[in-house]
Length: 421
Image 1: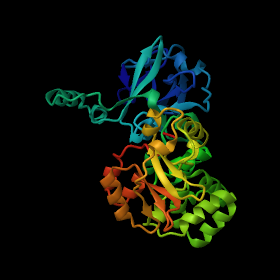
Image 2: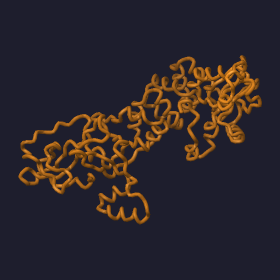
Image 3: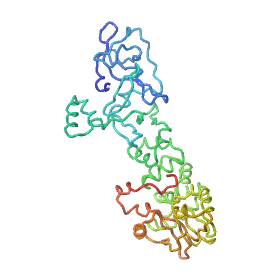
Image 4: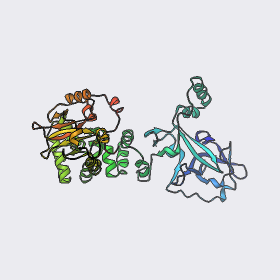
């Protein structure tokens, strides 16, 4: 085992023992077939400039001096490939994406190990020990960790969970799509907050429309608007169609009226009409906070029919914990939870187990009052009705509490409101 901070600067000697330079960098080969890159070459800084020597031409690497197997003059030039990583230039002291912790962190050192004759990148060190090692104070760091009973390796991240934020020759961010596909939208949103403005576009461009919409829903509307400046109106309209109507309405409220209207015209008619309906109401009222994606059933259905109905429409709902019972004119007449449905016999009419005393709010009910109702009755969502008791939408608990709880507290709330959870 060795660390790159210990290797750089070590002498590199020719076949006859004369020094030709010092180790400047290591080139590692990245491949989908291996979770950890394999060192494929070293870059040597000499009096005549830099030269790259293949790993196969080294007699040893993890040693005090690095000797060559044959004369340097006989070693052909190394051909760099697209998936090569320069560990010092590209990774050390740079930001990397930790896909396990879903965060962007800075690399203080890189650990190398020998495996079956190869030298492999095993971990990156993002902790204080990596900094102390480079200052020659590693023993002090380990003594301190032992003294205070802390784990000195706490800053080590396996390369399996590392994605370097490397830019290609066109300065495009190179992050594999498959890595992003493994992350939850809220994790991607956290990562975006750590990146530069130029990197925002590169990362967002790697997401498909569904991922992009779900990620934007995890971001505050004013920041959403900034991020969408990177895209054409046509793509923004496609993203808005993928977002829940209430989230799309919140985003459009952050844009100029002219652009909002232009985007609505580009959207599919059905989705645009749902968003326009929400834009009619003040933002901090039930009408402005509600989503129109919820599940309703008719009172004449039984439990088995309801379950079959949920299988067909549940994916399009914002929340499927509550099922609302409405008559053919959309009047709200009952509500039941999935728990109520599960324990009911298949042939039982829903009119027999639905709750007829319904807690609801009106379209103009203000957010503070909605939050109090949600808290008082321990609700996950509350239905929104008009003066005639016709149902228009639901306000989920997270939206009701959004501007009342501190941001740090909101992040502790469980994410069980979306149908994709």
